[in-house]
Length: 369
Picture 1 (cartoon, rainbow, N blue to C red):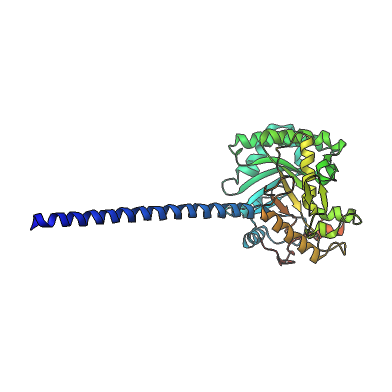
Picture 2 (spheres, one colour; picture 1 turned 90 degrees about the vertical axis):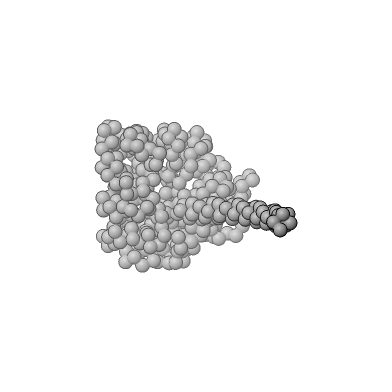
């Protein structure tokens, strides 16, 4: 009986084993496909998150009616704003930022630049007090030595040396791979900007900016530039279309060789890249450290409608990951100016009306981050 049964049972086992092998192979293939799908999904999610994270907001403090520092950080978090720029060390802001994971651009006050440039020990002390004391819980990204320094000012000659001393102090503190030292400049240093391929620094600015660019190249750090299509538009409304400044031209307005420009923001940014290339900074990345549009103070150009249009379209453009015609596909890290209206700002009335929010923390218009 057993002998007669053995061939039958062996055949059953053989067929069953084959079936199992096929099933296991099929499952393995499915798992492999699922793994590839999951990896691709994570990659796409990571890339989208990286693009989303390119938008920040500047936090100015020149006002006597602003919310508390903690309430402000809470407002950043509630609105999904993952980057902040401040213009000098502020212990209350730094304490409020602890544990928030908000990336921070922190400025060096203009009055401190000469001191930090003249003595490496002063730079080391500045880093200990304002960075190391908070670095375990605050996500520092850039240190900006000065904001819109004018080349003819007394501070201009000290910007480069201060950058070097701070870079060395940050590296000495073991944070050099995390925090980059730079400066924040502005379009006023660009002498020629049209067409963008002919962008160049003013002759009187080159003595100031060339040493800065050399430092950025050596340290693989970006240059921060404040870019405002609003000011270009109001300075030449006869030749610059409002739609071109507000990202709503719908087609090419400026043709520059093979590059076509549909918005003024890209044209200004690419003019800055051309200027960098002319001074040996071809590999220096630009971070747009300020850009915005006022909601009041100079009608009809400055209005809530125009401010909303500009900011919403700027965010959409940056988050698209399209880059500029000169730098296609390269994310444009951009900081919108500013979080609040600041009633203490000097200069034109519009300076007080760049805020996304009123000091009561109410949004002036609908913007999604």
